[in-house]
Amino acid sequence: MPMNPTLEQMAAHRSVRRFLPTPVTDAQIEAAVRAARMASTSSWVQAYHLLQVTAPGRRQELAALCGGQAQVHEAGAFFVISGEVRRHQHIAAEHGASHAGNLETFLTVVIDAALFAQNLALAFESQGLGICMIGGLRNQLPEVDALLDLPHGLWPLFGMCVGHAAEVPDQRPRLAVEALWSKDSYPDDATLSAQIAEHDAEASQHYAARGLAGRNWSGGVVRKFAKPTREHLFGYYTAKGARIE
Ligand SMILES: Cc1cc2nc3c(=O)[nH]c(=O)nc-3n(C[C@H](O)[C@H](O)[C@H](O)COP(=O)(O)O)c2cc1C
Image (tube, rainbow, N blue to C red; front, top):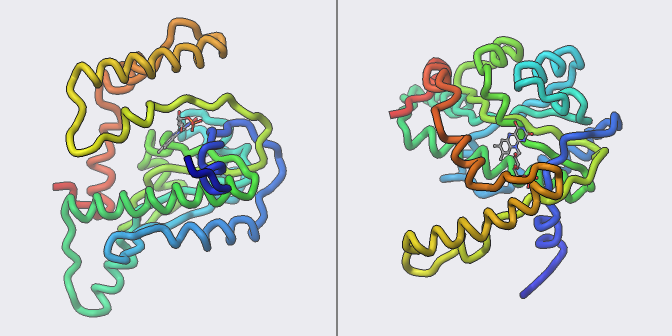
């Protein structure tokens, strides 16, 4: 199997949630953004924005709004990753054109932003920094919006903590390659069950080693999707100009 520094970097990922107070420099951030912006982007639309939140007071408030996640204010840097159609709407207005939007637009924007964000994470990790993405940003989006004074056409999706790691967490195992990659046809239910059982066994060991015996991966999936969460999002994104239809 081929191996190279990029593959090794990617394989070394783990989310970091405890950080040293050392700041992340603008040079490190600029290098990361410069590289990350080269992510593939649907039809070259570049539909994303990165907002760095620097004021300590705001970071504290954000940490509370993200479900009390201390890493949001403790990390060397914190960013909000947003999909953005504001720039496109600005261009359309300057051309006297309309800017149509529908579910396809929403997906285009979210996919673009996610690809940029993962590139960004890797760019930071390649500089020896740790990262943790923060979906908790969507817990109370109207409050986050008011705190950061976000304009129309900007759709905050998740946050990213970046900094010098104060921990080296155990890696969380992933589904087997065969479970994620098939050729020509999708696996049948029996194969799916076997692959899930295999991953559960590995995840159980991971949990047990961290004092959480009895837990597994599929139990987490059951808990996560047992009932809908963050039900304010349709109203919020619609109010910010998204048409999710
Ligand atoms: C979009 C997104 C949002 C996430 N939100 C959070 C979060 O709010 N808090 C947190 O501690 N981890 C968060 N994570 C990190 C995941 O929990 C983590 O990636 C996953 O458990 C796998 O662990 P690993 O990254 O260490 O391999 C998020 C990850 C993604 C991709």
